[in-house]
Length: 265
Ligand code: NAD
Image 1 (tube, rainbow, N blue to C red):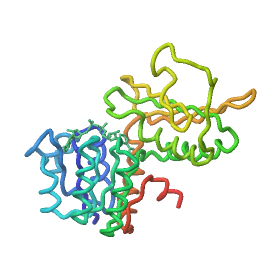
Image 2 (cartoon, protein in one colour):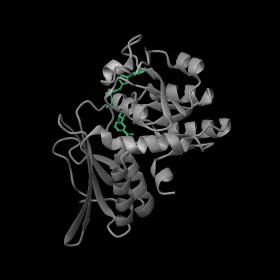
Image 3 (tube, protein in one colour):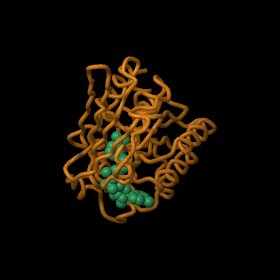
Image 4 (cartoon, rainbow, N blue to C red):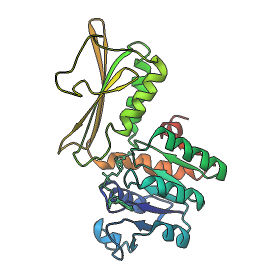
């Protein structure tokens, strides 16, 4: 049995993760942490009253008392960093879905996990279709270096651009390098209207009620365009990837950034 603790358990992704862990073969939900509650059972939140795991607001104590194999984290930027550090120092494998960390922070955790020989994963996107989108976009960028990314999310999302958009841009930039796109003398009549600039690639973040997680990567060439699009229409889309990651980190002694490195190995 892989013993799992979920942090951010009462959130949108946290509740879905608790349900998935409970249903997964060979896995046991041993603890749940969220700053919003302490003392009630997660079962009532996820519509499974038979699951009697008490919500705690103290991750450090939960890790110490329960000594789980894996910590799944869907909290928020600013919180996740401390949780990763706590997990690695306690010898617990972090499987991190929370986005919004800087490249430098991720690098620091990779180093810490390597020093402590603790396996783990930081994955901006657990949806297999999204990983394929990035893979196809990276291939397309060899032939179509002019790229813009539009990512669309629900309006409760804190960070922009999305972790997936950053991962896509990094991956595309690794293939095509820096490229100044558009008209050199272009100017913005409304500030920011051309989007964020990553190595000359423009990234646009849409935040509206109704969306879950969506992204379109648009390539422009002479007389043609190519669009590669992925839509997560429900949060269940992330669960097969999450469960796979929880299983795979058990065999790792280092921290991996990106589920694609476990999926397409
Ligand atoms: P949410 O706001 O619904 O949930 C976050 C939860 O964390 C809340 O219940 C909140 O109470 C809890 N929390 C906040 N501070 C805490 C603390 N100090 N200790 C414990 N719990 C704390 O958000 P969400 O939509 O579930 O998203 C969570 C994160 O997951 C975001 O960063 C989002 O971008 C990311 N995300 C990742 C993927 C992926 O595939 N990797 C997919 C969707 C969302």
